[in-house]
Length: 378
Length: 78
Image (tube, rainbow over all chains, first blue to last red; front, top):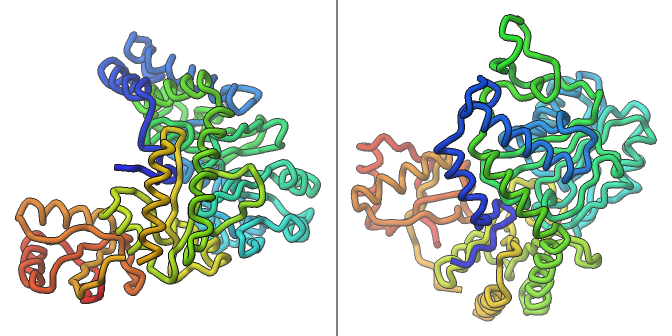
């Protein structure tokens, strides 16, 4: 199978990641739940991974790195744990449902929500964002890269607009963590939400968030913490405050190996490789009669995603044909990005999304281009 | 693109239901396969079970017996 659905999850993982999970599953106890060797081995790996992520995102302190199950959980913690009825929050049409749905829920509870429109190329209008953010805005939340078009959003200008108005800046880095450099201090990020199973190349069920020191967040969960057993309330100290219950130690051991792989291989190298493959595919399909590619390809920096349609064929039909006739895995439909499809005018048709990994090959790209050419000629 | 045929398309409320359907069909040798839901149909879950029109009764009986609930059953060009 030619796997080109890496924006959903990077299916191929470094061998070290798989080995680390297997090793952890035969040796790891429950972190922070005892001083026996098995428990300590889990605690050590988890703490080490916190340090890796802290270094990776240039955070001040590993205690500000929280483990969650995925970006969705991190975003829910940030949105529901910070906003209160009466607060104003600004977001964009580029967002995934993991941002939009918690925000709609908060809107029903009295939060004032503004969604900044985007162009039909799916780019963010910074002027419109600037107009939307006011001194009464509590939070600006936006993606670092669209999961549908691959458009990359530089964070500094957004951060500047947020902070100029005294608002918090929350970032959804689902599509960029592990591929683009992220410096939470330089970029003025108050909360960074990421998943472990995409660009970070770790197992599914791992994810996390960085929370700026001193920023209080109401936890979504309370319960077992391994400390302060006789207290009626969950500990307020980070990261325990936001990590009730047993962590996914086995998965985090895999993420630990993935972070090592990323540190050794280099994010810049991975991004350059992915982008090369993406541009090769884009150049190969953009001129094919009947093919419409979505998104902004005028800048070099973009996620390794190309979303397209062939004529007015249903995207599900094209994706199914790519699978059955060419053994190529893509994702059709709405991609959990309803407002982005609205902006692109593809609500009915959906789009066929090709998303690449540094593990893809030039030969696979050529096969995919040939498939699109043949399907478009039919 | 391949020529379309009139097919039976069963949609589901959740991915869990679609997976239960695939498993049950395989175990009981009921024909068909999972496809992405065609846009002509609106459904809660993005996966559907596609089979020949002639398999409708067999599929309906199997679903009833196994307790798998469909969202809808369509006949459409796929």
